[in-house]
Length: 273
Ligand code: PEP
Ligand code: MN
Image 1: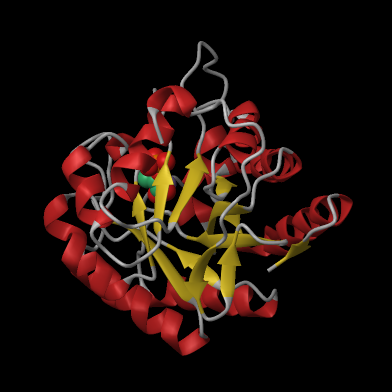
Image 2: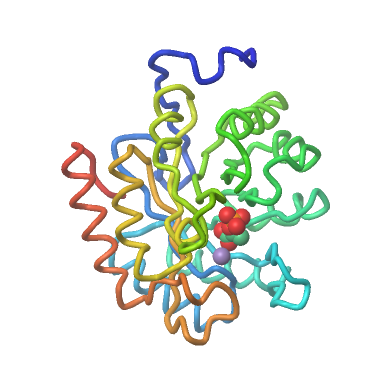
């Protein structure tokens, strides 16, 4: 698509993206992807997987390679984290979304993941976009926290131009003058992308707000704006989390998140997968 046509197309139909195991993002059902910010232990993943299965959720997120602002923060378990994710997910019949931090990680991450996440800080890391563009695997492209919608859509074009059309966009909050929350959820962007681009879009209320108590309200807002799903950080015990504990929804509140999503989805004539 030529640059000037981006954002101008009148009513673009969302092209659904199949993740495997019958899970489709961009169809009638909104898809909840939940899991820890970072994979920490088998016990942590098992507790989350059990709760997911109890609520009928099919897609587990979790970082093995973490893009941390400080080099002194926990950087993730690396390959060990990928192996744990795959093992627990397979045992519970779940799909895996996890981040590839650099070009050199793409073949490794592709081996273990069902969906490859490109993080906010990497949205314009073009060689990484080209590398996942060569794969036959869905890509979750997070919006850069300082990126315009046009830059985000052009980043998606970098992936698509290499042949991979299975792209899901993720609005995870942008940096604004407001500092009371970690970022600002751009619900306009969700509605705009739905109206003008063929890619499904999901909302990440965790990084958008940075506060566990705002995750469910922001999740409702993302879905109300038209999001095809959510990416939500949960933890069995957020006080013990090795990363992003402040924004982790306690696992005990997963039922509330699912119920809220079901209510909003129903109001829009949709269901929750
Ligand atoms: C994440 O989803 O774990 C993450 C690091 O998010 P972002 O790239 O949006 O900061
Ligand atoms: Mn996180």
